[in-house]
Length: 167
Image 1 (spheres, helix red, strand yellow):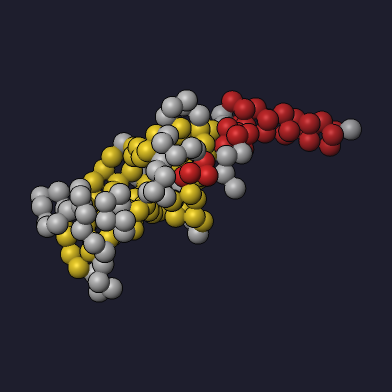
Image 2 (cartoon, rainbow, N blue to C red):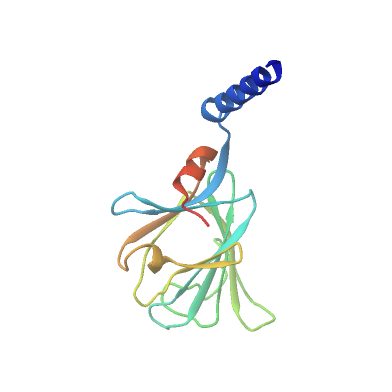
């Protein structure tokens, strides 16, 4: 009898902690900007990096942007590309350094903090996230032409579990 009361009390305390004092976790949120719907949450660690890749609209060559998760923002670490195109850096500036990598690709290092990144899911651009050994095609999450925002935020663990927006 006494053991049952102790277990019941512990379950009650645990339930209270989970619902009232629920801890928060850092996630990468992918949101459809047209309707505000969250398309996916992925748990991220401070300093963790991932890649946003796309096909350049003019030169039709791949571009790989490396992004890093910080406390409540993203950092654009660098861009890798193998051909110049409209809007691509063609020399070092005060905003970034352009170098030739050993593999022949160009790397533009910038380490620029941004609160979020918004891309319009492209028909040709084929935007992909390379995240935790997974490749996520943004056109699988939202229709081409839709603005999609990536941002770091903190959510309650219960919301993360409830929404089930990550594998």
